[in-house]
Length: 475
Image: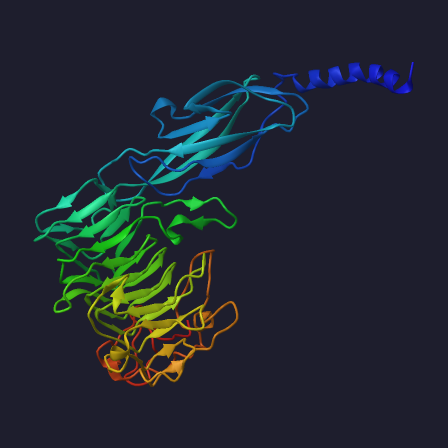
């Protein structure tokens, strides 16, 4: 008999014994499970809405298998649910884990509504009851936040949304013609994936420096990456704000609008009346344009317009004024279009152009040219558009439409990011406070008299104030 056949015969009983050991289960109280965490702390969730699942691992470090039941401490009344080894619920029985093996345990929470505005805790634990009678625990903790639910809501009469509780918008919040939606200081609107604020009437959103109005996506949890990144820091978490052609007189003051598919999209209208004004506000981290206006009159001041997947400002015709604005195309997930694009047409359709002025602004980004105009020759000869007393990233520094402009320095792979302190923090978080080396310092004109405080409430000096929406501070 050949040697390899003899060895094969001898090894067969050993293999059988090995398989039998893998499936040997013990009820001896000396053995226990291990867990990847002792407490699962979940992100804040809106009451009545199931959270994303949190994960922890169950390990068997022993040389024998173990049988156990997994039971939620609160039983059927617990707001938590688990899924273990493909089975879900509040009680899962007859589970087995082989020697030196592991299982995934997913936990979600759906906290009942209480009708009070305050956030509150929810606690429970997963109890692992071994065949030996030994009981082990993994604790669960979550925060709940009540909200006013708006589903298919049409505002047909003058309505005010207050700051008493957040408002959760599931689809379209529509403001009908003739109606005014007022957002009180501190109002918070959380939009579900794809949900939009659609305005045919008028929106008056006037927050304060201490109580900004928030419009953002409704995901309160984090991506499970290292380091974790909150979904709130990502674009395309909701739709955006759509202002229809017949809507005028919209006001956004001390508003924080971020994480949308787009920011504010204003449809074609007459430039005789103001479409919207935006003061001391933020439009940030969107997948499309932060501000897109077609044939509209708009007025924007003391505002941060940053990190667009397309352009920060996209103007087709109309008339626009931007004062003390930080317009920075430093998108972290892709290199989009130029920070500012100005045209006298939208697609193939011509749009009358009445001018666009940028004064005491920062216009920068990753491109060597962040201010692009696509205008007819007859308009280029007119002094109805231009950039004054601003920091500007352009390749053509001889354009006569630039007055008292400081030209930004383009750094390889970073563009004008050096202007800002702490360029990226915690993944997708960007900070646009001025760095001490920024060329935007001390170049603004005397308009600081009209805007004596920056977006953070820091006083501007009467002369030689900094361009952009933030005055430099050491801290």
